[in-house]
Every structure is written in structure tokens, then in C-alpha cells.
Image (cartoon, rainbow, N blue to C red; front, side):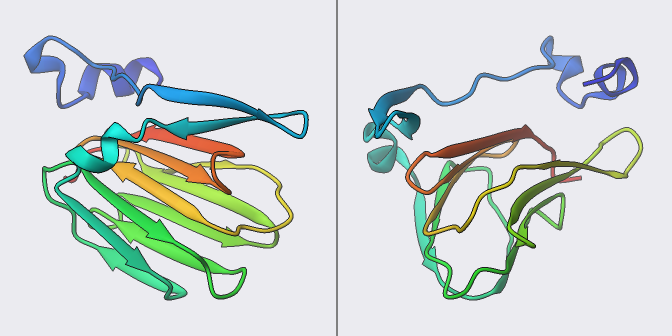
Amino acid sequence: MNESQEQQCPTREYGYIHCLILPRKLVLKNGQLYQKPLEEYRNSAKLERHFREREHEFQMSTDFEIYEMEPADNDFKVELCNKNIIIEYKDGQPWLKRKDWSSNNYEQKKIKISAINNLSIYCDCSAIEIFINDGQIVMSARYFCL
């Protein structure tokens, strides 16, 4: 987060600008570290949705929600919170795009991976955690539905 973003962060008026991520369990599997959200979060989620469509758009609430996806093919796109967050898989790379609340432009994160077998999205009204392939890769972001 750059200085301009910090100054314009919507939570600044409440005395904070950053957030904590989900506590997780770390598992060493075949020499690789996997990150898994604690099982207790499944019990506290207000909503859990499962989907398989290639393209999907969700309007999120202010509650803690979980989205589960097993892609039918490799390329897909998920739009959340009026397109403030876009999760996309194309050309062998998962992309996390977040709309910057100070400039309204998208910031992007990507990583190379051979395939996505499953995707778990844990989110509330301003933080998102994406667990790819049972936690082989995790992507996180702060966002606001403006």
C-alpha cells in the first residue's frame, strides 16, 4: 500500500488502515508448505457457495462468506463486490485484481501454476483470502465495495 492509498483508506476515520489475515494451519506435503484455513471458519461462515461456472459474479454482503470452486476447465473469471475484486485464471496463471480505492485503477498479482484443481475464497466486507489447490498457493487482499 502506497502513501496515497493509506491517506485515502476508508477505515482511517476509525483509527486503522491494515487488516489481519485468517489464522491458518501449515502442512508440509511432498516437500512443499501448504496453508489451510482453520476448520472453525467453516462453522462461522454466514454463507457457503459452491460453483463450477467459467464466469461468475457475486454481490457480497457484510457477513463472512466462503466460496468454493472446482473449475470445469482451466480458464475462469470470478468477479466480486461490483468488480472491486476479480479472480481470473488464464494462460497458466491465477490473477488477483483489486480496484485501488484512491485511483480506481486495478492492481494485479499473479503467479505461475500448472493447473487449478480447486479454489476456496474466504471473504468479509474488506478482506479476501484465496486458497488454491488446497492451500498450495494463497493470495490475499484488502478491498472496499465502493
